[in-house]
Image (tube, rainbow, N blue to C red; front, side, top):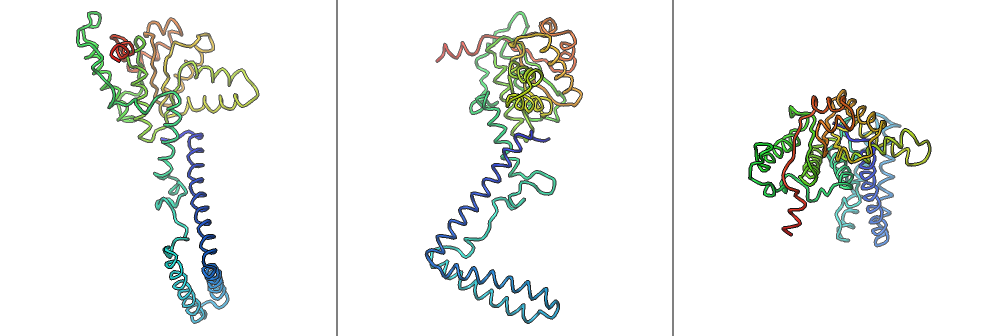
Length: 334
């Protein structure tokens, strides 16, 4: 379980920015206090000097420095008491200028040894959700807000089951997959069916739930994914190439890749090769993938290749969506 380097960089930058902001606020308060009561500034200088004397005596006299050290400590305590009274008179606490950390676990470093602290992990989750929200309205799309009432209870003769019964099973499978990500017996999902049946909505629900558990999640459309691979391969200069390098690395390395709308892109030999390589590399690395498409497995074999269709039918749990177009029903009921 690890976040993409870009996500980690942005989260770490936010952590550093928070620390700098707190330091700036503390220094601004210090200058205000010094301006109101210059005696506090003089005491701070004396306290710094007593600490220097304490260290110097210890180094110079070693074990014989006891009396000198006690004298310095007594002087230091007297100065601190006077300083506390002056700050109290200004309506401030004695420790108002002390360096304070927001996270006591890591001291605002973001790490406890070589383990990421919960404070940095929370920022990584926020950054990842921000990335996901560029394509998904994650404010509304969640398993709790999914509405099964739009699916008919009338049995569909072609499937011998009603769209509602089928969707209940699809919903339960997707929710269990997301809630138990990494532990669920199913590693990959292939969601297919006509447009407007909830494939993208449930994909977004999965993305949000898995991301909230601290896993790295990348969601993108098939068109954008193949465009990034094309830019990486055929362009040589410019910022677009670096972006493509970063994005394609994320597609390969993230814990969960959600590839939406497979089949809507312009398909050619390059796309076919790229799709096979991406799916195969993630299977070998035991990385999880969710694909949504309007294509059946048979149509996928015709559009791409039998090898790709074989990977999907053999390594992905296939969930079919059928029923009436939910977007149209919502529009009618509006």
